[in-house]
Image 1 (spheres, rainbow, N blue to C red):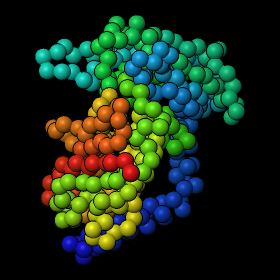
Image 2 (image 1 turned 120 degrees about the vertical axis):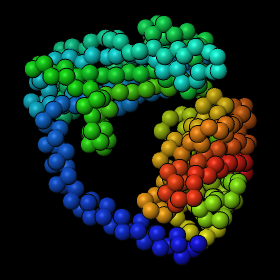
Image 3 (image 1 turned 45 degrees about the horizontal axis):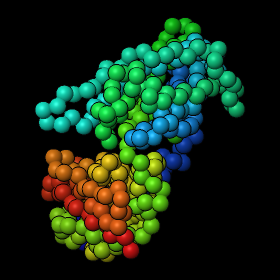
Length: 322
């Protein structure tokens, strides 16, 4: 098994060399991005101020600062339309689906934008949870952790052209040109910044079918706050029992008693392309007690894309505070 994985690590190293070479050609790539951007127009996310909606918090809301960019340095900006909808992501058996199709919430005229530090138009969009509830007709009592609202922006230029998330490519949804047009503020239960942080003992079960050893051997890991107040992350060594030493980050979300795992998380190893971790579809998620952070569980899929050909494994990680 060691020789099998080490052989495939060679493939991974070769891939890294390709990535490194691509980084050396970064100037050419940047030029291509810039040229593509100049043919259209974007709304760059300058600062995503608030993108989560804690239940029971009176001033909860969504807020984002955006910057408009076009071929004429903002002179083509006419207006930005804001659409709001609701996604009922927690439909219980026998219950009605409360999804609300998006509709036009407001229009922001170019005249209300100010000039940012790069000489381009900027504005801040703020919508409170109360305003979203009133607009969509959803009752606060119907909200559950994991539900989300959709806030979509549509950029209108003076020449009549329109741009939104359907026009996005991978080029303009990341890095400097972060321009998603679509935001999905999620309903969460508040988690204190002092909760679920610090050192924890990590154990996993059952044995990994990929390596024949625990996915993560018994390790002490340090939990820290991630991109949101309800996200936590730690770094652990995958298949440590086979002698590997490189640690990779793993993140999860604490959502009103459930522990949710985002997909596409790298293990650091590959059989063909990449062994990744993700949500365990079709089984109950891990759980936590909002009043007791001494121990909790994470249920996730190991090798979620079946990169090694042995099938997707459902792994339970137990974390106990040290």
